[in-house]
Length: 255
Image 1 (cartoon, helix red, strand yellow):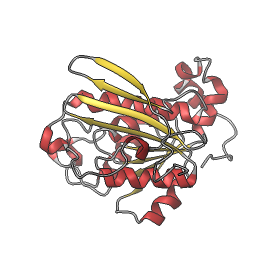
Image 2 (cartoon, one colour):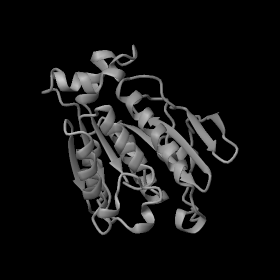
Image 3 (cartoon, rainbow, N blue to C red):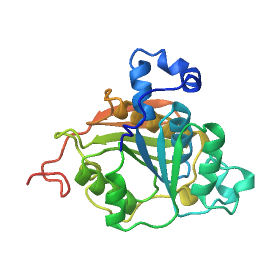
Image 4 (tube, rainbow, N blue to C red):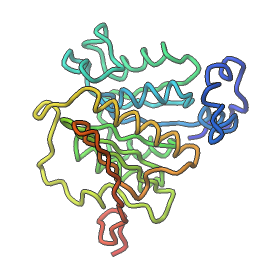
């Protein structure tokens, strides 16, 4: 939740974020708002790595990292927030130390255990934006449900092989679709990187764009709400499709 105790940027922060402050859409006011904001990142893997690095670098003042896995050597091909020295550590601890080395101005909290639905909802209620960087439908449905209940914006990304997709479900807007408008049911057919493979920069591309969407959501700038971006890195083609709210959706529909 926005930290209203921080009322100004100090000289070190003004210097660090000067290139970002030059953007008229951000300016000093927007940079201060980022510094006051709280982003919760679920998953510190291929997507969560660039998300966390760029949100930390951009000056989002409070990050909460949620992941119950440990760093493995097979992660390092794409999970760039971790280092060889972090193998065997909890991913959230690894990410926290490396993000702190990048930006000491921000606050970073960690949770390294599986959360109950009530815990997820309680955490999300403290957030200004939520980032779904998980890799399974159960987690995505749970985050979608909690963000819908808490009326918080949810930035959801996914990547496999050469492909990626991205959307923002901004539940501050009454007409926003939700994740279950796109995927009504879990059909048990989900693919994983360990089964199908993944090109390292693909998660970098999707995660970086998730970070952009999160910054825009925090600053009330236009996002992909109501749209689905689909990327094919093999052909370097990007399509953006309209995604409408499903009136029959079991989560957000009215029927």
